[in-house]
Length: 142
Image (cartoon, rainbow, N blue to C red; front, top):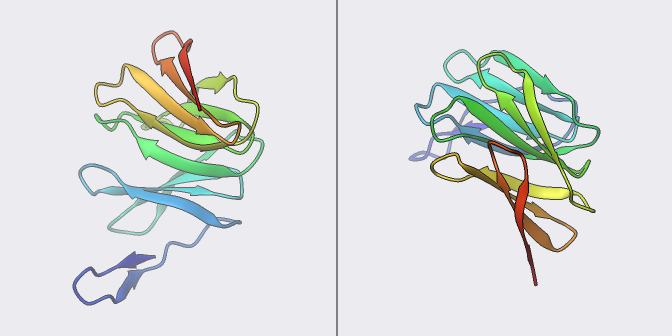
């Protein structure tokens, strides 16, 4: 749902996921909305027409979070299947899959410059990945 901040009124409802919507974010320019769902997909919506432009499929379990890269060219998803995936925003193609956590992922984000990816998991760790090599550079515990 999209709410009017000043009135609290529901302005739009985006319908199309077959499961719980677990996260939603606007693109930096506000032209698109990205949602993540328990139906194992993420969707890119046109924010002015409410039309689903692309459905990102490939995770084996619920998608817990989805975010845009700072330049808006990529999408990063985190899933209960213990993976994070990087997607091409314009084509919807999965470009890479990051594996290494032992439990479901709760979230994943790009660094501001896009050079790293940070993932957080139920295995009580966060991992920092080099986004060009897909190598885990550091595991944070504690």
